[in-house]
Amino acid sequence: MDKFNIAIDGPAGAGKSTIARHVAGALGFIYVDTGAMYRAVTWKVHQEGLLPQQETEVAALANRMQIELIPRAEGQQVFVDGVDVTKEIRSKAITDDVSQIASFGAIRHLLVSLQQQMASTKGVVMDGRDIGTHVMPDAEIKIFLTASVSERAERRFKELQSSGIGTMTLSELEQDIARRDQFDQEREISPLRRAHDAVLMDSTSMTIAEVVDEILGLCKDKVGGGK
Ligand code: DC
Image 1 (spheres, rainbow, N blue to C red):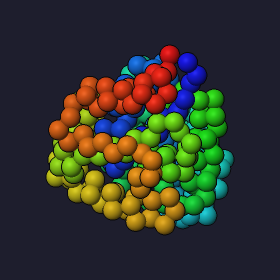
Image 2: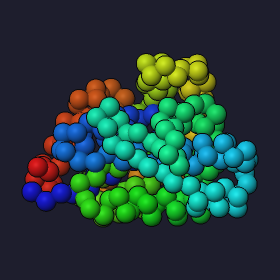
Image 3: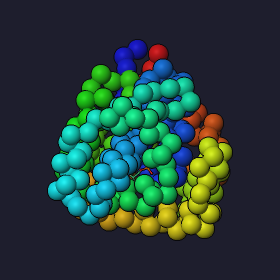
């Protein structure tokens, strides 16, 4: 069976990364978390003492930094210029500024072309906000994964607690998720949208295993499975 690509888009905290990682594992595909790339640029912006509003300087910095994504069984490891930033990019400081950085055209242009290179060999499960609409408009499988704001905040809260980086309260997380949803949906360039040919899945009352099974079922129906 030939390899194919899977695009998973949706708002913050809908479970995209967990689901994408499981689907990739089941199919023997590579998982690419594109949000981590926008977070990596934001980390470097902080390191260099730039303000997130300094678009020209931020774009120049992004062009000279190197982002490496290393797939691991437990998730994707992220390196910026050789430094492991996997944990740090999940901090509140980065989360506060990442939407602003992700709204800049030059940053999107740069990261989208890197993502398209990664997808060119097929066998990729990529999650983000614009994967089905811009990065892989020809992906064989497209999912738009959502869940209620309160459910998403609760999941992210548990996730952050269990990885030992739980510095935000549940209500802070809920506000943050609502703020980022709005910013991502209203930005001018590549706003968060469901692609016309994406399958809408609401995971509010579904388990991870149920969502994964449904996606694997779609893969079987549409392209014959993967392996
Ligand atoms: O999925 P996440 O929370 O790690 O994403 C971080 C930010 O990056 C979020 O504000 C939306 C943005 N993003 C984007 O604009 N396009 C993508 N393909 C992935 C993430």
